[in-house]
Image (cartoon, rainbow, N blue to C red):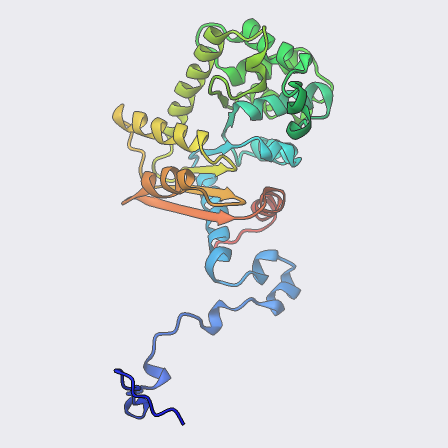
Amino acid sequence: MNDKKYPFKPADLSKLKTYSIKERKSLVNMGMLSSVSAYKKSGKFSDILPKALKAESLKEVVNAVRTAKRNKKPVMVGMGAHVIKVGLAPVMIDLMERGFIDAIALNGAGAVHDMEMAFHGETSESVATEIKDGKFGTVDETASHLNGALKKYALGAVGMGEAIGRYIEDKNMPNAGISILAAGWRMRKPVTVHSAIGTDIVHIHPSMDGEITGRATLNDFKLFTGVVSELGGGGVYINIGSAVLLPEVFIKALSAARNLGADVSGFTTVNLDMIQHYRPAVNVVNRPVQGAGKGIAITGHHEIMIPLIYHLLLDEGIDR
């Protein structure tokens, strides 16, 4: 028998003070449960969602967009290229056509993939394979089209998005119907492109003109800032899949809009991504709405979450 003494005494749990569960504030209750019976009657997906955690956040996003539409406030989407690469351009275009999305911001890669799908119907090369012998990013047609679009149409105050969208339409590219940029030009809805020099494959080609590209993307930043200035009082800004560039663009545009006198407060921001990153968390979800507004973060794969939000927006009023 080990009779070694320790310098600590065991707790005497016989003296523990207890109280009734009726006095305790519980975090989960019957009203939060998923309603299978309601779902069987209505067939509405929202009825089977519990009133808890991110299920409630999902409903808040849908309600914020629907409310903004009713109140004629803008809904903006900042979108990384992955949304296009997983096949969701038709969904985004339909949301634009139905009035749920008023403006889209793309990074440069988004414009590249949008353009390639428009003229070629395929996109996204294998970087790991092509980088070995320096072929990555060197296909001729993409750079010729995209840089050519800027040289032809990005004149004066015209931005990258408008120039590329107009070019795709004017060229009557075979898949122009699934181009977000062309849809923006066709509907006269801002689709801006925010390009950082050196980040896009078209920048390494001889057809690249830094002066035109820089001016055109600056024009788009000004247009983007103009839309941001209208978000106050119920607008919505959704960042989908951009971890760095578009959250940085958004926070600068917001500061500029407020500096110029716009009351950009009382709006909703959303970050929707497979992984929650630092910049979207601080520059989209937290800082912009502190004190007046709401920030929401939802983690999920775009190819699942965006069709789900689309379904809820179109088929279900979930103001409950």
